[in-house]
Image (tube, rainbow, N blue to C red; front, side, top):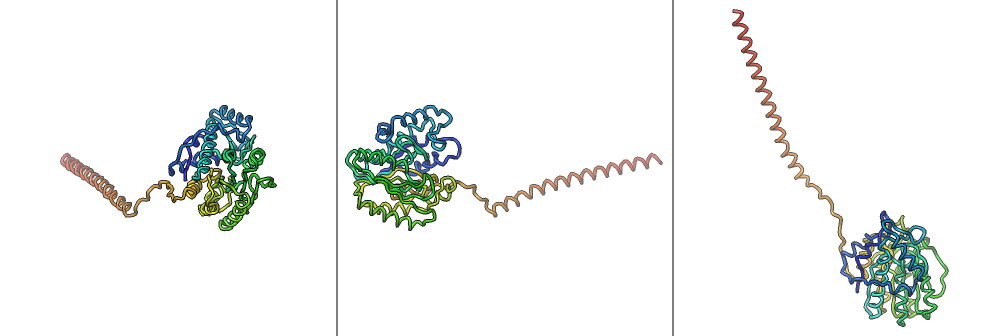
Length: 356
């Protein structure tokens, strides 16, 4: 499997503890070998309006040292955001082209895209990476089934799909299996859109069972020639542990779900694009599962604990030094007292001689 990424994705950043931060993929960039992404600015108009493209470019240009927000205050733009987002689109189109040639590929990008609409955005996303990749393929005659496994419904992607299908003869289909009760909420499915909402207390086996059943039916009905996966790893248990309160993550998935997903779509060319996943470990393990390798993650260096025997030796070695000093002091005191006694005796003898 081809992995496509770029260090420019680390430049999209803001100060503070925002969940969508460079550290999400920093570790993965060190762990995996990847093909460098290309700038995909030329593909933006496949999905987005010129007004929105200009708005993102302008926000990025005006950001300077402080970020600008593209929505009510959660989707930020810094001075490097527009360029990074263009490279995210480019990486997605590269992955889509690999899939067209029947070679699986993964675009490990940020900022993510499945909450980005044609003319506006929310949910940390900038441009609709996967919708642009799907449109690129549909224009070449492919039928693309988008499978979104992020814990959040891709409201932006489904909006883009409905718009694109009007000019692309319904060659796109959006399917999402997401956690109920979280942003952006539920919706009524229209056109080639199918959303499944699972409870937060579902176990992984139940999730896999629902996913495989729904996919089998959709593949049989829609007959896609390529599958595009919105790979959101905020549905992983590691995100539940770290970001449950921040983004509402409550699903218990592991790399097993990815392995089963690959089995369910076996025989159909596919590519995947990173969406959510805020614990760096979720991203590393998720990407590794797609590539089909096991990885050992870097562990934080801990201060080595001192051996008890060695510590005891140090204490014992320090005692003689202190003892010698004390003895030396005692010897000096005795010597001084002896001198004083001798002088006193001499004075006493001198007085007796005077009296005589």
